[in-house]
Every structure is written in structure tokens, then in C-alpha cells.
Image (cartoon, rainbow, N blue to C red; front, side, top):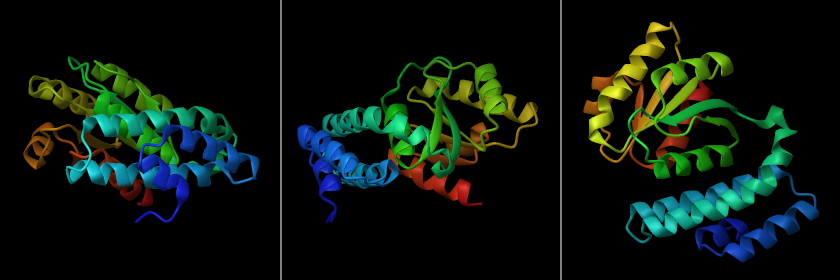
Length: 207
């Protein structure tokens, strides 16, 4: 059971209530990061409800949209407190795949957890992944895939990252991703649930 009223409101998809509470907390001097943490707890709860079948994809998308609206208000305030960011993560959907729903939910969760996320979008070429990792010096890259036919693109992107001498940890995610796929493409981690992406990021950045 969620103790925080803001966490509860976003988990229950109460859009107007969340917007009002975010505004009220900012006005009363609560730190933006603290507000993000409350929202993140609520989103994690919505993710749990999705995993147990209580929520469907529609509810999860709506929760993500409420989070997005809140982050639009909070993000400019967070940028100023860079010291509180946990680190930078590059993320994108691999070449040939234009699905971004799962990726967007992960991006929201990661941002909500205090990470600076460089979102490369969809249909991302391997060169773009390499370039973004070099430019940002990110210790972690996330690759999203929905289509089984794009597995080779993922493998090629990871091969290119390694060929460039980068030691960035690679997390792959998607509905059919498992340990067999992870080992085949050469990734370090795999995740099926969006919430797993945050847990893995926390583990990587704790090293």
C-alpha cells in the first residue's frame, strides 16, 4: 500500500489531482527530486499492477502520460540540480524497428529515478549508438526491440559498440527478450518489464 498521497494518485491515474499536488508541493518548497521520487513510486506500483494483470496496457500508457506531464513541469527544475542526477544513459529502438511505447515508458521511469536520459528515438543505426555513447561517456546503453526480425540489428549495434573499444554496459529490452537472446546478441543485461530497466540501471550505477 502506498503511503504517499501523490504516489497513490498517479498509481490510481488521477490526472488532475496529480497536477494539483505537484504544483502544491513545489509551492510549499518540496524539492523537485523528492516529488519525482513520489511519482516514481506510484509508477512502479502501476507497473506492478500491469504485471499482475490488474492493469492493462492502456492504464500503463495513461500513467506514463501523467508522468510525462509532471516531468514537463519538474524537469527544468531538476536540470539545475545536476549533482543529484545519478548518471547518463543512452537509449534507443534498434534499426528497422519503429516501436517506441516500451522505450518511452522506460525513459520516463529512468528520468523519474534521477537519470539523465539521451533518447535517440526509433530506427537507430549502430553508428548513432556509438556516437552518442562516445559524446556522452554514458556507462550504460539501453536498446529496445519489439520485432524478432530486428534481432540482427541489435547484435550489429552491440558488435559496433565493442569494436569501438567502448566498455558501456548494454541492456536490451522487449517483449520476447530472454537470456538466450541476450547471450546471442552479446548484451550484458536483459529486461522484459519496464520496471526491471530501472533496477538494472541502479545496479550498474552502484558498481
